[in-house]
Length: 251
Image 1: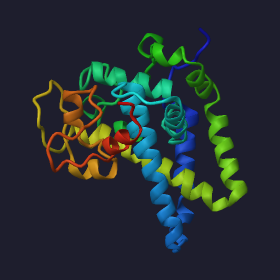
Image 2: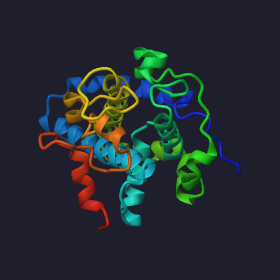
Image 3: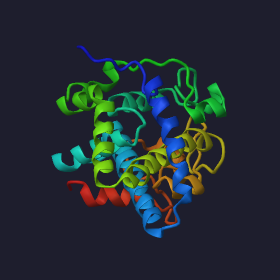
Image 4: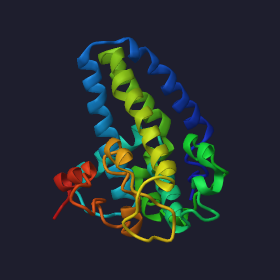
């Protein structure tokens, strides 16, 4: 099978993530509330739907069912989050669950350190095809994987043709936000917070992280029941991602 999935955070993705951080600097000079609201809305859609619901709850854990239209939309939004292709991201995440906070965990801050985990400077990690055989056999995921940067570039080109500012507020800003959202879950949620369940790892629930990541911060809850799409276990634990799932899942 001709499919290179050696790294999810390869050098090209790291370079693009750094570029996105640099490109959002001009956003600080725009005081127009419309653009900031658009950026916030885009972040919620990309992080909440693309990453939390798509890459994590649907493609990694198959915790709910939906139709083809929403599946394809989640695939696209997960791609433009610039965290790696669905195949690579899911492979890394499934490995994380299998050896959470133990040797072999790709990004545990307890194993490789907080800083390295946060910025994505992980030890070399090759994704095994057997861990992602459900996605690697899907023609759409294979296409998005092989044409990952072309799809992101085309998306930016479309946004630029409409209005150059859309590239900054609809692509760069959500991508940067999604980067830090994932980084905080990988690090803070294995260091600081509270635990509802005595899992065998160091996963923590962190309310602050949960609020800005659409529910991803309820990490201890998630590690207790990885295949449950609702990460909230107490009445006051708001999980925006679970609300998105309820809108698109097939009962």
